[in-house]
Length: 489
Image (cartoon, rainbow, N blue to C red):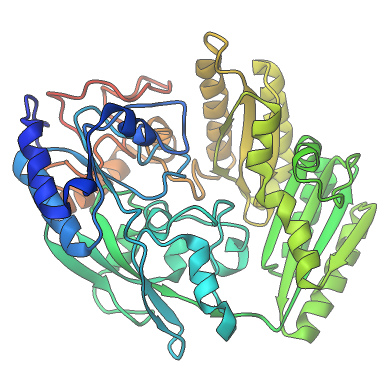
């Protein structure tokens, strides 16, 4: 790994980029760069020096070779919806934006696969194959705007990851541009390939190992029957116990989501579904799918379990428009918070399902201790929490205090046997908490992998791993600082 260079001739570098992607593919105007100064984690901002908009694998390779030759750090960005600062620029960097790489290259229904460029929007994949009775399972809440390339980088999940897995379970192969500009193919067109699982290594690597320019995805047949149950409870604890009991019964729902009272009312104020009871302390949204007889039997068993745990009402939707109505509020939960609070800070931790009651109580206690309201809306089935901390960034010191609260929640997740991330990635936001989960030897081993792909350290530097410059003992660090003269991992 080498220190990043200062005193670069950006005018010359820009002209080299223009020779590859044309003048319209290079952005340097200060006001236009504002669009790219952060991703979905808006608390931190830094303008890139240059934004480049490639359209093909060859464009990406040529651009990366220029970065390699000049020792310029580069960061890949898709739609910019990430919530961990994975696409956050650093000073004196090039941002390679894949938004124009939006072709669905091929559709192979016979073999249940599609090949797409990284700028293809998540929901476009299902739209392309739904007419033939197929769909793409990973469905982040931002699926109508997030890109497949970003999903691969962060190993995104979604409502249906409980039964069908996260992005890595649906990626068969990748065409990669490595940090020196060379092009490599990993994985293939079949589920299991001999040799090292380099596809598995790359998915979730957050742009630190290179850029995926073609992605082969697995698609699934649409189930014969789908049912969505909405159960409301007078306590969060009862809803949490229901989650554990459903899984313990041997049923694996397609998805199982929980929302607390604050989230319920925020959603109803904005989306107006008129199906979430405002006086409920918690609701569960549970989807079952499969053959008609299987879905019917499982929905009846789940309904009985809900009532055994004190559910007041259980609504079952079978028609597509009814199911969509029940899910609409959950999908809009994050956006709804923006209506009632000037700012919110969302975390992403994982806990064992059996610890739901305990952890939700502790989060409430932490919120009271720090003086902030924490709304809970999350993937209950696999214990993937998304606590939303509501605050006002205009209040001096508020962000720092909220970050401290978010860190306390992540440490709590690790303490009970969980993880600091389920699907949002580590990025710039949570790198200081990696030592909470991993020993020095663990982290060093991960760096061996990163160094093998990215020996000069120019691909998305400063992300994932803590460094002395970016992290303090047990504290959250600021980002977007001057990194010149510092080795970046």
